[in-house]
Image (cartoon, rainbow, N blue to C red; front, top):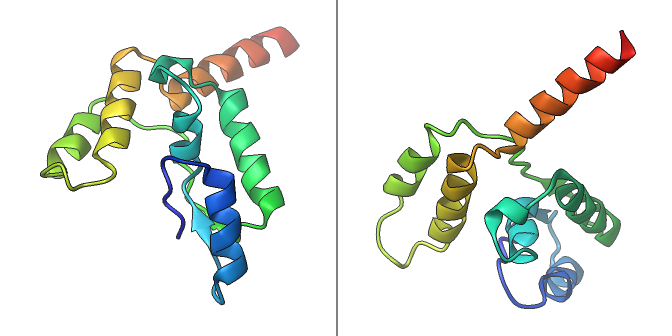
Length: 120
């Protein structure tokens, strides 16, 4: 599982894929977050772009964080203890995103509601 969150992620992933005798998976939101300055700049379009790029690179499977309930994100952040936890930053970023009311789940729901109104 490639959980890279910094550096030249596509190059790192390419080396991992080429060297690995087993299937390699990713968590695309980590790379997507590395491409924006602020979590609120993360868009569905960017997330889909990262997923497509990783698939084209030959990733075998992905863990997709497509939405989260805002009330659960702080609990995830609290579950990670100490600065040695590499995913703590991602949990904090998701918390900030959720506090702004901008989870992917919320955005997709709003988009779906607009689409269904415009087609009926």
